[in-house]
Length: 66
Image (cartoon, helix red, strand yellow):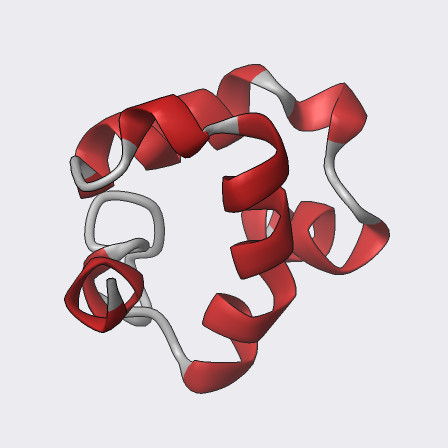
């Protein structure tokens, strides 16, 4: 599970290929709440979170606005 979170933003952030610890903390609850069926596929999780943008927590939504 930790490996998944380390790779979570590999496809989602040009500035932080692995995602920063802050980004992972911001989005981990949303992954479990909205995209648990995509675990452990990091690319699918990122796609799912983008698709669920309207339902993201404010902290996770901010990660995807960067």
